[in-house]
Image (cartoon, rainbow over all chains, first blue to last red; front, side):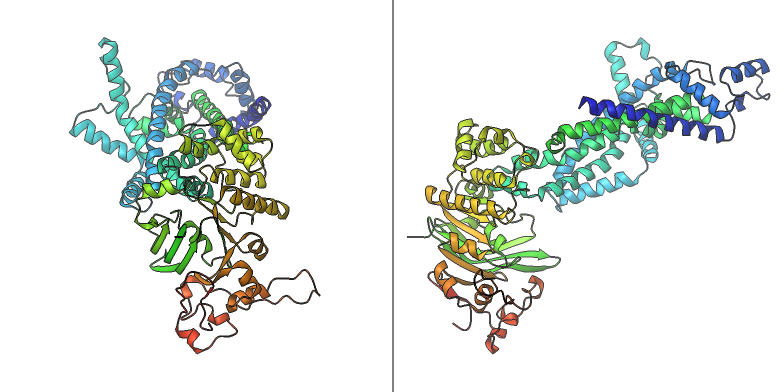
Length: 323
Length: 316
């Protein structure tokens, strides 16, 4: 197992290089270079500052040289400074990443805890009214775009009912609250984004769970379990569920990069200070160091997710473990 | 003495789109204590459906319906609640399935799956009982097998485990649905000998489903020949094999290749069994029968008598 993991980690290095290289090239091709907003029309930027910037990031050198220099800094964990405010990129990420992980992690957890029972119920009550209602709910959830649900919820819960704050992570006065009050404040801010992401994520996953369960229920070993005289709940919750959870492990691993990519849209809608919004703003501002950092982290999470999925797959399925 | 299992006028239909198609039709069959009845027939003749009925393992989702009665010791199984039927499964009636490769749960150890059955009987897991059960089905190396997952042991070993699992409660009736079909020929014979031995030792009755006439001869006291959901011929195995009466049984036995004599052309039966959606009127066999006459096209032959020899054919 250890050799397998180290082999996979080594194989990840050229992939990461490839992804970052392509990103670098695409950015270079995009109209409006990194210094576009530092043009002569911008009174805040003097030609000296611009000159310094160009020199620091080797912007006058050919693109492949720039890339090699960027990689050279990266291996020392130096992501550079943001073009926008000259803050270290690593500091920005350290600020944003935990908030994104918190929101997406909670949402992922919520989705899995709800999707599994819904899928199982739908499969066991196959073609009954329960199944039909759940199916309608799932298709509605699947078809409606996230940002639209987000806006709808903001109007209903934020404006009409006024129950929940619509944007941000904390209240302006949060610092003056007690410890418990601050926790409550964060929870309130998380409620809407969490609800929206969970609702849309739930649709696909519960459908997946239902179909997996339906497949398993038709297997011979389920018939054997029944023929033994096992009570139905044991047949479903042990014999069937254990098998139908295996493919879900893969999905869990593969949804790791969604932590960032899904955030790009709804973190922006909710003005949630997460990594997704950072990436979005960076792209808009052609902030090369920040874009490259978020892409690198995204690529790393994707590869890590794949690896985790494969390892846990082996853990869940003895047929793979013993090979 | 009342028979152990008594199937009276059983019809099983499956729903296909908007129609109910019969898989088993007007079947009468009795099985006495300690007796082995073989059920033979081509694929799709309804023998597996018939085997699943006493256990109550037919689909429960409304795609299948049954009429008629199935008695186990004078208790009509169709009148029981689902929970009461479950308590008979494994305890009074056990089953061994066709494919040992797919009949064990791939993600649970043999020990876990065996102990589940033991817990139902003894209330708690018991290592010694598991060891004894495996010994009973002649599995040496029982410790290793208990720790294994199904994919780590051979097909023959898996089938032995499944047999051991079926024997936990010393059931009165064992239903074996082609238990040797998926195995190598040498293993087939071993499993067959094992089933014969255990049946005698435990005094079980057995319903043995197969399409192998050699096995029928070897293992059964009586045999039933099924065609298109009907039992067309029933009688003592030796009698039926020596002097088949129904034209279908005769054609079936004629088409067996012989080990002695010249290797001529093997006689084959023309045609195919009817699709359930296109059952011919009258006797279901008449389109393929070489002795068919006018009445066969109009009237389904029906023989009610369930003991002794029975032939569902207008010729008799």
